[in-house]
Amino acid sequence: MDNTTNITAKFMKRMIPVLLFSVSIFVSGQNLHQKAGVVEIKMISHVILENKEGDLTKRMSNIWNRPYKYLYLDTLGNLIKEVKYGKYHNHDLLDYVIEYKYDKSKVIEAVEYENSYENNIKSKYKTEYHYNEKNQLVKEIVKYYDTDSVFSQSEYIYDDKGNQISACDERNTCYVRTFNNKHKIKSLQQIWRDSLRWEYRFTYMGTMRIGKFKTYYNDGKNHKGREIVLYKNKIPKLIKERGDYMYEKKKYYYDKSGLIIRVKGCKAYDIKYYIDIEIQSTSKLTKQMVKQTNKIILHNAL
Image (cartoon, rainbow, N blue to C red; front, side, top):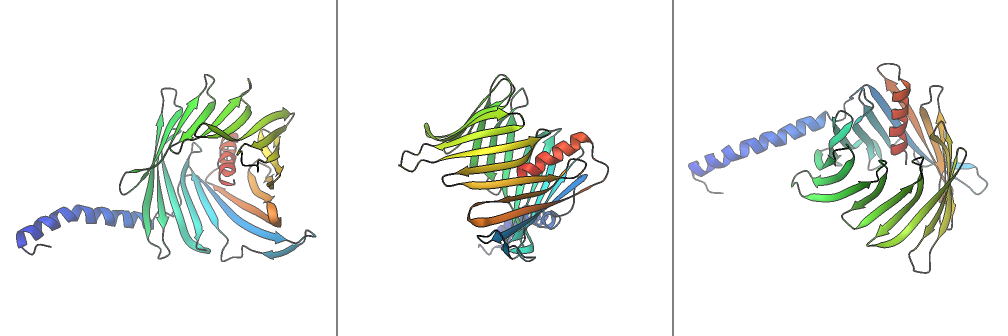
């Protein structure tokens, strides 16, 4: 650095706003984990291992490595903050925070903050959401917060009935959907560089949806499978997946008001898991808020 007083003064004058900006991020970061909104959803994850006889053997997620997440909703049921704990198998250590901004019910921006092992919180990504004249989401751009350069980008296309029929990212991976006249999904395909990779084809029987799965990798290892979803009041009650290389079963439990309070399931290799859900609200939830709360829970319990 030049040691002259004049240059040093100019350098410090330029650096002061940067330092103030850095301090403001650090200070705000210390408060990111605080509660927000009118509804708090706490999701606590557990994993249990069974033996071949189906008996529980050892709880793998003990109190020290059991991750949990807080979701906060506003009065409209919008997700305004997501706070995840359980970094590096330490349930007390903050992992990340995502804050969302809205224009009424449209999310327009999200900022993700990531924590380090030394408990230093830093803004990492910023997501921008763009809509058309019909208020349909048409573009989602994720940028590095510090440089404003693009990390990923997705674009969406809709049919004349408002169904999202295509979602493509910057890697030329697309998810293409077709729907019936009742807005129920008929098929879902993954297409990469104009080549079909896999697809689901769906049929419906009463409150049941059956999806036949097939891969098209053309490597001699193509697989088939089947997914069954049972619905109750238009929300999932039971999901089963079984195939050549996949197996998963997921069941949802509800309280008297219709809120999801537990998700229980198992995957291959006898690993069983469940998610306990605790909900607190500043007032009694309306039917619409119960529906919206369940929607948020389902999305985060995948």
